[in-house]
Length: 431
Image 1 (cartoon, rainbow, N blue to C red):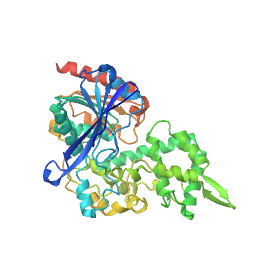
Image 2: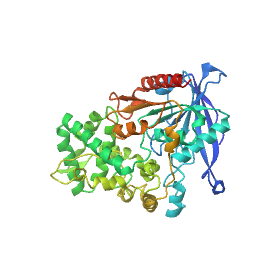
Image 3: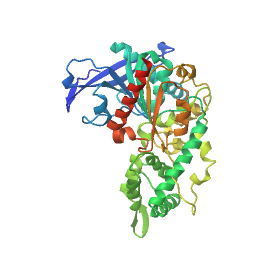
Image 4: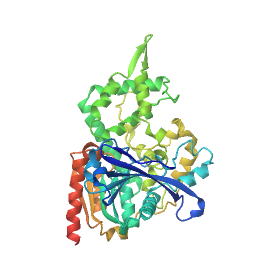
């Protein structure tokens, strides 16, 4: 595809398309397209600032569509050109959806999807680095993008000059059960904080949940809304400034029509808009595989949830939201996930996942790594992040409770200013 560069707010946006192997170990399987958008300052003219590659969170979401010269991009572009990578399967890259997978059998879908994890995302980036003729570049990973960063440091450390990670330092060896034990605990803490601030919200949630158990309510796409789907909006509690908007959403969810309660269309539409799994199925179908190396997830979050009965709502009991978790029932209920149910089961049972990290390489790391670790992060547990960083030399953590998981989006200039300074300090010690 030929796309032309454009200029906005003093920034030049240059599109790049690359044909990369679907499977780097077996190139004859064919190729897919990967898109990246280069951002450079018009005022820099032809100067050759070094590149910084951005790895988006997820998995399964494209790079942000930058609007205006602001946020973390503004700070980074003082020193870098930015390459916003649409990870394979997302955005303008060869996209994964229920539509694009419809022609494949479930086993073919599952096999195809195994090539869309962090290892191949990183290989794509390395392919692009070589195509652009870049000797070394820096990387910035947010959330799952930080997982990709540790994979990059494991596979191709010689290609990196700096690594910045925000809210995304994973365990390199733990089973996802350990991760979900921690995140369910953190999710409960967020619930308790929310209901403490808005005591009336507990009664509102119970009314909504009881109504859904007793009545059929349908989202604008025709999908029946269930209590379990309603609980999933708790994912927002991992982001800053979401308690009050959630309360506003709850307080006028129900309306009385002909003497009977009914969920308002506005509320139902909001519920559908919350379901990012519909438009970004990688986020659901490969979510637990990001933790898997030589073992199966076997629906880890679902199994851990069964040990936490408080999250399985029953009438007359307190209501609690869930967080960033994927459950097998989603592939029975979500319209856009139903066609992928059999593939999802195959992937949940898959045991022979390839390694994503090289512990020996990371233990000998020479690349300055600067991390923002959020003390109250609902998605990536601080203690697990610290455990990992303790075994990676030249990696420094800024541990803070000033931000939630979305610190990069909330205050990107300050966060990146801090991390860049840390990276320079680490680099100075390596000279």
